[in-house]
Length: 233
Image 1 (cartoon, rainbow, N blue to C red):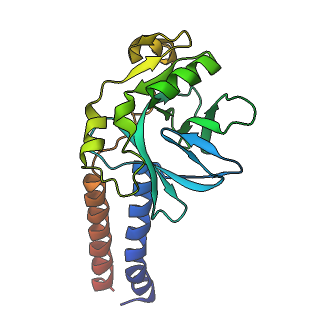
Image 2 (image 1 turned 30 degrees about the horizontal axis):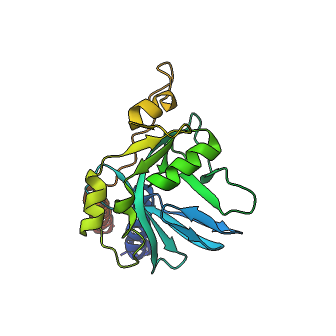
């Protein structure tokens, strides 16, 4: 076996590992944020610190967001988000906030993964959504309060009843006037103009098995090519 072939054989598992890691990041849109002060997410206030935001690997077509600590061994919250369109994707992660009274923790509106037209606007419990809508003079996506009581449990599983209820819950929007309306009515003006290019696909929260299978096939192809190269020497 040539020196080149030996080197490539040793590196092939590394290539596979890096490929799987890259694909996992694209799938769950893992983003790390560090906050210098307390911030609000649906259902709770997070103290200053570093947190990891991810899309959950769920069969639901809804955006289920999970917020972890920096080491990703503790879940602070599991909640819903709706698509939020941005005309020009950013090269860096972007997080947006609702306006709050001076001295109050900033309430996170949502976040955008680098290079994506679509981000994730957080769905707040009805009472909080109504307050945020009034303070910001803009509609805020909302869900029934009773569905958010268990979403801050650290041991919450994605197949647990509280999460399953989130996937079928009726979502709506609270307006600054206190009126409750359908999401499509409240956010109709947020859709991209018809003249704009077709944006990226909505982020998928489905299973990562197809991507893993593709990475495995690529790895097998690389190994086969290396064996052929060795035999021809």
